[in-house]
Image (cartoon, rainbow, N blue to C red):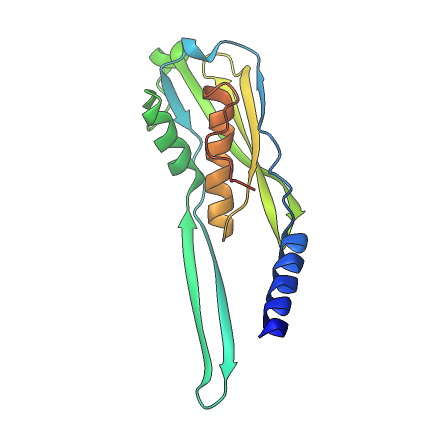
Length: 175
């Protein structure tokens, strides 16, 4: 019994060492003009990403058993939902008569970084003024979850939190 407890303690310490407690990088927000002057948002369409993970195991007398999880995400949907909560009006197309009060938001994946047993995905959001295409602000953040869809969802929420919540990262995972 003592040997089992020692093995469990050793396994737990090895797992903690391998996964590490490195925190996600703090979101980076660069603001070049007041975002409060804008009421409308046009989000450049993005494609849906499908990701998943699975596990199989061979068991004596049973055979191979397993399970899998698949998740999908469309980054523009996540951005849209978060901005609606902040009071912005999402436009289905650019309206020339509203261009002086409209932001265009572009989404891009800007990197990956190994972290523990997995990796993070970094995204950048670019906010442009619709009337002159000048950059109003950029937000960069990374996320890490069970799937790439989770990584992206968390990164988007962290980037927008960095912009709107004055750096209070309300969606940061606890390490």
